[in-house]
Image 1 (cartoon, rainbow, N blue to C red):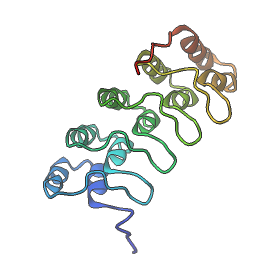
Image 2: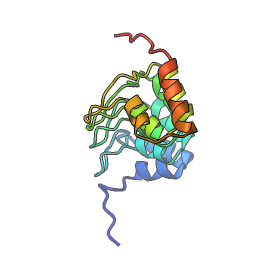
Image 3: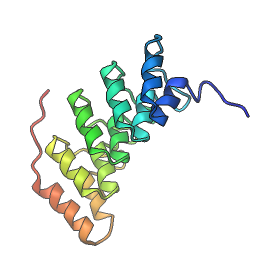
Image 4: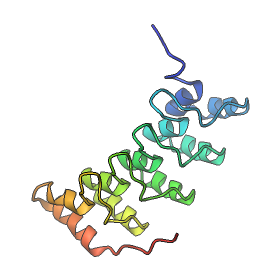
Length: 172
């Protein structure tokens, strides 16, 4: 079996498995907490993907870079939305991660939440200041995505949220 160290770094494996004690022991040995694997992912990405909240919190406390993006430009906020983790979204906001960051295709975390039809995440993102007017590379806003998703109760709920929740002023 050929295991590439570029693909499976020890810290990444421990973050994925949720082995808190071994991971903290490894961090004491000057391991690069922001090392990137072949896929452009860090241990923090792996912890978020595998829903290891304690590991995510630990890595952030130990100065893991919360602003890093993968090769497709997806931020940790994108991954938090993909894994439906409102706790991680809130945690990343405490570290001033941009809630409106766009990946290489122009998708924001709000676009992803709408596509996944997650009214809970859409509500959270809007309340926390997500900009519902940002267009992806196809020229679509999150509301436009709703209009393509068919007529049903969930679509109407999403449209209602996008229309009613005000856009909070951006602090720059």
